Length: 572
Image (cartoon, rainbow, N blue to C red; front, side):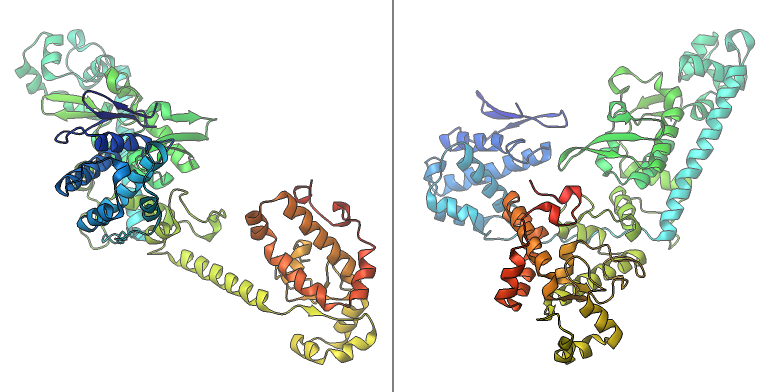
């Protein structure tokens, strides 16, 4: 199970979705019914009951439990969770931080839901607003790298990789031409032959293998420089790792912890990559083609070293050979700030000011998303479904690129236009007679219509399904100059639509369609999809005489066949 409470001593054991385990203990706290109930509530916070899915989060809740228990003990409280009063909680929350209040609210709600019922007034307070709202982070949002810095970073990573691959291929070719140095003597080709066959060897091992002293190996120049060419080193790993992040936008902790088993090849150019995001748990991504190329290059480049990787880390994606004088080590490196700083120094990478480049893996992810302009828009309201709109705005829109700024302004303009159009009253004529034109001087002046256009509107030559259209090629709902592709109900809110009595049968058929859709959709779904159109239809129909509506009603059969619907729009 994801979490369980264990006895003697009291502790909570977690198994997170990443496969890692965590044991939360309560040293220094006396075992009381209060602590036992809080520990049970903590266990129920784990997935799937709650959202707790990381060791750091579990440790944070353990600290809040300690704060609450000690505060209640000082206040003289000796009861259980069900005995807590509003005054107890308010006093504790006032003495702590907003983060402490938020965590204990979540914990007590879990206790109330799964362990023991709280007092009604306490439950009401837990459901209300926080006494100390969590303040916005004092840290400014990560700004994306400038275009020149981004291009410089990508070019540097590719240069390091290209140089290392060239040396690697040359070393493999030399190894293929070499022989056993024990019999053929010391040479570059022969030493590479030995390293290719036996893996990285220390100076002592090589001396033992050749039957000479270590001083002689040093005199010959050693083998570390040759091993660096044959096997991937830490700087090369950093270059591949940064380039994969720049090409895919995966969270930094997800890339750092990748295993070979996380790579699911679905062809030569398609990869589904599974990774663990510490804040939310397992996720997956269909890698973009440039990221697939980086991953393929890395697997080929590291294959030589991977043959000699020890079993505990053999499945890790990132492995490196680290020469240390006459010694060496094969490891799954922790690619932290120190590794990035060494990479910057060794590669000579600088920022726009000429200072050493500041590599921030989270900022690389921010830049990846910031460089997506409106041509890459997919319709999703957020870049990452785990983010709120506020978080996305702070991290990805605080420093938009010019293309993003244009896209945002276009979206705002479109939304403002929609609001203006919805506020306009519908254009309705009461009869089909030619004399109607003389009764609409204000409408004719407002629309700027000529006599010929008005005659076509009144005569039905500009009719669409629901109304007469003033200009079907205006491009309001599609490309300008081409027939409007809007669905029949969109005309209800279109400022170019003119409604006449001859349109009443189709308007009533549309009203019946809305009623059928309402019966098969939830109220929230219907309001989101058809709500505005149904409301406008209720405004239009009363403008016609009751006798005209009654006559048109007789022609309505309440069937989908009466409307030009697509297959997915039909009702059951």
